[in-house]
Each structure stands twice: as C-alpha cells, then as structure tokens.
Length: 160
View 1: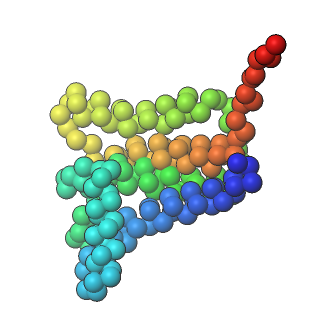
View 2: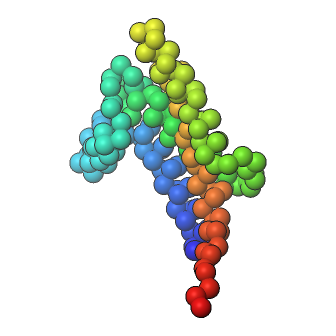
View 3: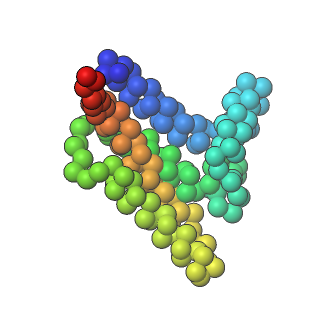
C-alpha cells in the first residue's frame, strides 16, 4: 500500500478541490446555454442531492441561482479542500487520537443545531457554513496525513 500512497493522496486532493470548485461553478453553468455545460451543472446538482437536503432557505445563491448544497455543506467542502491543500504541502504530526480530533471538529455544528432546536431560530447561512468548515478540514487532514499510516502488525500464534 505504501507505494500507492502518493497517488491516493493526490487523487483525494484533486477530488476535494474539484468538488468544492464545482459547487461554485455549477450555478453560473445553469445559464451557460450549451447542452454540455447544462449537463455538467445538472450532474453536480443531482450528485449533491444525494448528500444534501438542498433547502433553499439554508443555501447560498450565486447570480440568483441556489448553490448545489446548503450553507453547512458548502462550509464542509470548502474546509475540506483548503485543509487538503495545506495538508498536502505540510506534515503536521497529530498529538491526539484521530477520533478525538474528528469529534471536536463536530462541536461547532452541534452547537448550531442545539441552538436552533432550543430557540427555534435558524442561524444565518454564514454561521452554518463556518460551523461546518472544521469537519471538512479535519476529515481532509486525517485522510491526507493518515492514508499512508502502516497497519498494525498481525499477531500470529504459534501452532505446535
């Protein structure tokens, strides 16, 4: 697996950066006027519908067109792309177990959910986007920095 590690990291980096970019490119493509560009936009929106509720009141708009994902998902994907680029260029060793870091990254989103459920007020889309960014960033960082981690050795018992 180690010999494929750089390729896996590059593929992940490319995927998260391209996906984040497509989220911002798709709305203008809906007005592009060519069948190919409209098909690209439709593909992005259809793909996004499988992973996001796409509620209009919880989404950003570009050029008067709703983005393919809600504000929180936008924050997650932008955070993932930014962290993947930084992680690919640097190597920061983790001091805490990965699950601890991942759990901590969910705290801002959980806080907005608890606020919404207890007050009935919906936080602004910018707050939702910013609260989602740490989750995306941490997941990218974990994938980039731990994709080459060696698996623990398999313990074999002696058979006599």
